[in-house]
Image (tube, rainbow, N blue to C red; front, side):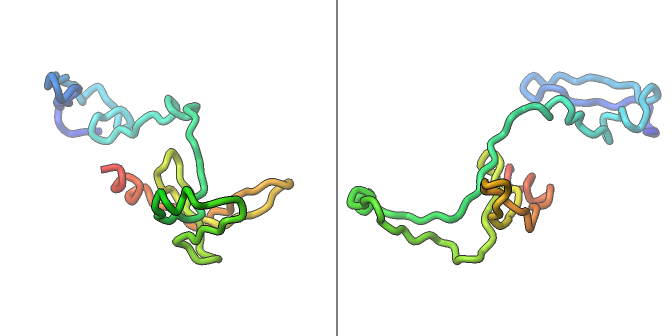
Length: 121
């Protein structure tokens, strides 16, 4: 339980609307200071997961001269873990596996929540 009897919470930075909450009526789980977000609201939102093998920079001229069978060298060595991204943001690294006749990924490293949040800022 929070010790203070009232707390102010800024709801909208643009209008600087302030809501006063009487903490005496809140449990620890409901406290505006310690409350965790309800992730149940977003669990059904689809995201795109992708696996990045590597990348390279080439000129438009090089791109236009490529044909079938062209080999493009990427910035990764064979055996290096591949980047696993969700909506373009790095969430881990892993290795390609085969499962039921399809490609899959075995996660070998998961980026910490602090690192993921630090990349957003």
